[in-house]
Length: 185
Image 1 (cartoon, rainbow, N blue to C red):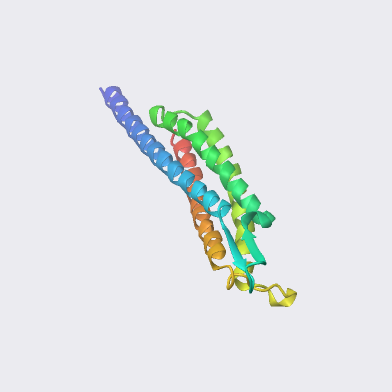
Image 2 (tube, rainbow, N blue to C red; image 1 turned 90 degrees about the vertical axis):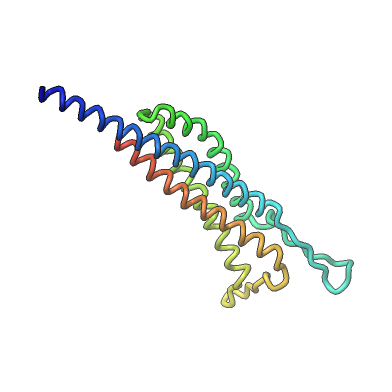
């Protein structure tokens, strides 16, 4: 009789772990979708950031565009690639909801999520450095702040960083959640 009660207790524990893993997988899917929206919005906001400024007459125009600065180009590319990756990883996340005990695909997602985290972090950090210089300048190198003249361009480029840094935080949570689900397997 004791053996039967132990087996029944183990079965309920397995169901609990299975239910927790399923809940983690659902949360994983939601975080992926939100991170996808964040990276997509960041790439679109930065990719469409431009402003023309006429100088004393209408003949001479100065323009600020994202593709004038290599760090902004890298930011758009890194966010776009991460967005595509997140879109392609959604079916695997749905698979984890259905089969919460899948292990090899979780390991693959942890590795790929980490690579994409590094990629989006490097792009966002490079763009953040340029946005900082655009807002504050650097007096020791005689780089002047351009945001007093190009306010729309600066606001849009700074705003695009918010979505990217938010996606970075969500990617960290995705890695942690996948690791927890893998360890509970």
